[in-house]
Length: 244
Length: 281
Image (cartoon, rainbow over all chains, first blue to last red; front, side, top):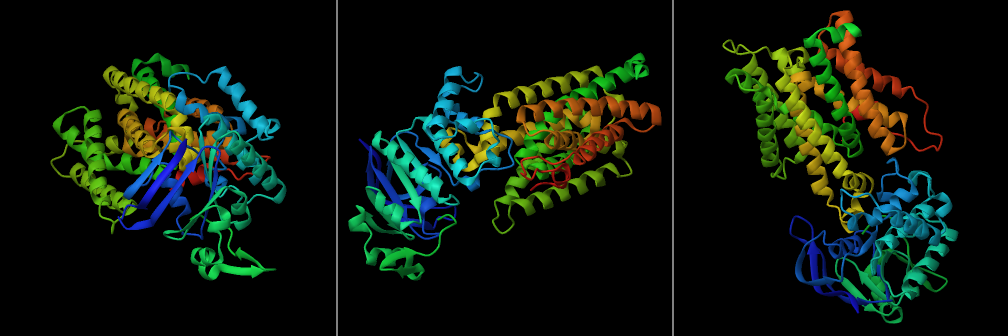
């Protein structure tokens, strides 16, 4: 089943001028796609149009159902008084009428999702008091409670230490194996090589396909321009934070 | 304290300010969490021309307040459409102009209305009708806050992900501003369009300082709002000062006292009442 089908997409913000154009790709069940690009290159713009927040100025954009979205953890308010469990329970809001209390079963499932990402022991801790990697895992647990077939993750490894990063990658591999579709925006070319598909963007689509086809020197230069360096024969993007 | 209960006039005034405190407290918690303090201040100020015109026409103040807020919202929306102006400048200019217009109307030689009553309210002048209107509007605000609690929580915590969780942050913020307008309209008789801000922000700021649990913050703000009403009426009776300002002073005293509360042990910087009172834009 196709989860995302995008063809000739042009999208942009309120002023009507396109921020991202010429995007064509598809993502199926059990596939993981890395969106690679520099700051301001259109990665977050692509995620926002897939979420229905930005208009389709030209072309088409079809998404199966309502995807779960894991924003950069730094965008959540760390001073807001919610526990890790409260955050995960937000994943059940859309299917629970406003006048009805969340069912006990949802609470049990929320604990199960926290357990799955190795965070159930911290269920009662304030979200803002957790480390960057722990916060990211809690947000993924929230996406799991939504039970969406498609997860959109915006730079999930930003501000995460190497140990937490390995744990997150293992969770994402499990989700892919379950048949969920993953779209992960990243700056990290090594991460992009792990996934089934890579989409390079820099204001427009530069390349799309399996990593071996899409991650060519020419495509990377067109994506990152002068922001590329070569270390021990490997091509590396030199910047690592911010949103596209 | 018991003397307050002897007189029907004082009992009615006490009921009015306690009711407003219970409604404004939890509403204020959400206003601070969504950082809409500037909007609260602006809406409260902008309704002055409506109040003056209602007073001149002999109409209920609550109708004038409602008309003033609607006119202000329309003018702000109109001015903000010009991208060269922007929303903050549009609010500042519109509110400044409307407040100036209100004062000019109120101070005109032929105007019988007392400007001070409109600016600072007069809980002692509340009739049973005023009390019933405030109770009805207050109930609407509390029920709506209860029903919209999840949307408010998502919008305040993680607006970027809200849509994927089935929440529209724009609509949620808009609905909160509508509730704010309703609460201000309900409060105009008791506290006027300047002092209502104290009851909206100060108990909430104290509650945010005193607890890091949302449910506790909401209940504590309602309790502190009610206590500000009781304490303010008592202060007014004992010190022979106007009731509305006395309620506002007690509410702000809670915020100042709470700012002396020790910080959280987890090291997360908390937003204090002073920042909340300053606007938190």
